[in-house]
Image 1 (tube, rainbow, N blue to C red):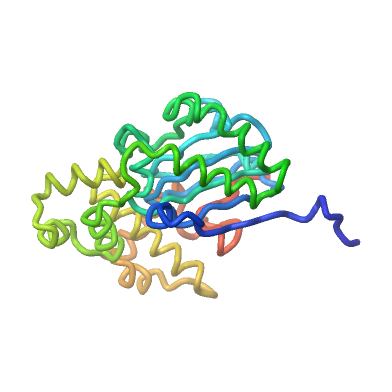
Image 2: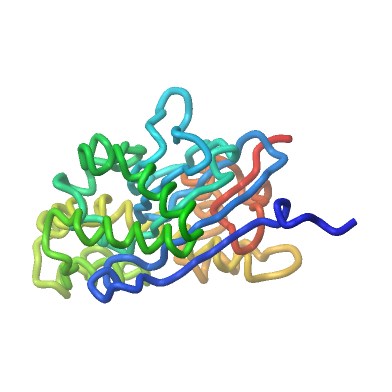
Length: 275
């Protein structure tokens, strides 16, 4: 039987239309979803996200709950999330160091936590969800995302210009360049590199490199078909051997590589946990 219009999921992903936001934001979007599972793992990416739950005024778990608009800092391990909070969600995926201009605190201050925008932005954060709901009612997802861009342009705490040195450090670490070599390329001490990365990326360089290596692994796992060749994947992604890969996978995902079953290859960081 054909599904009604109300049953068909809506998803919209766009690049920022404002030129000032393009160096800071990879994409923003709106998504609706209904899921049979009761919980899922959200795997670390090394990046920060802004999230607004339009279905209900809450985000997070019972021990880490915020109101419905929050900044998700970079995580160093898996987080258990409620799929019911993804029934209607607006999101912003920041580029490396992209969240920094919108915060009055270092990005490292929101590491491994969901920080309410009312805490970070005061009144502007407290009313953001209502502003987006009004825009959605008036013009749908496109109008909602335009309103969000308007808010971001007005909410910058610092100049909307990414630090080129930190962006280069992130790119080098993402490619697997050793931390010492990254510091040498920038002409920095290891301590200065650690301080700047923690401040603007939210993670110290070694931790950031570990998470990005894990993401390279997930990309290859989801691109292949059939049984993975773990030894080959370990070599390709920069692990010492298969045992090192498995150890790191468990540390960052909370499960073994063979237990990893994402919602879809395109949603590789969402792993259902139950019926």
